[in-house]
Image (cartoon, one colour):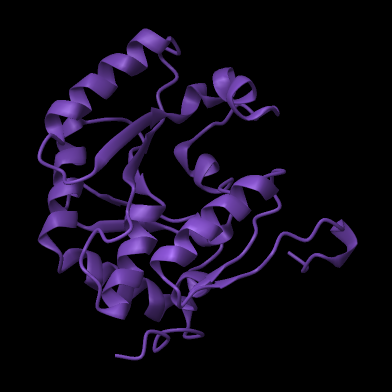
Length: 210
């Protein structure tokens, strides 16, 4: 298979292809079913578990090759304490105990409370998990999936899927995430040498429109 065979196709075709790849994989569907069983509000499996495994499929590599962890987002404003989030994290460790890699659960309603201490700059208070997906360091990373009550796969890809299917890691300038973009791109290139890395443009006037 030519790994770029779905690049530059309409979004609808790319989205349908991604959904087909996910639904045909029993391991990924098991993760989605387990997440749904937790009953978390505004829950999504996001980022690397999706696009990394798409690259694995298109290049003939094993499922979960290069996947460091499975990121799970949820959004719950009812209790912003660390203790409440930690309780859900411990619950998820039991639910996903059979997963071959670590499942990292984070309440996106409270990220702004700890982000500056961890990364050195402020992060806005959000109103949904999707707003967090919007803010990944690379637009290639900005994708989420979940399973609804009708067993239908829901997809969120605010910047489309063409960068993913084109094997390009492109910057997301919504936040000042130049260092994270470079770090994650370098790691990804080691696992998927087919990737093209678009460097962070420091001059706002020289950045692509949109």
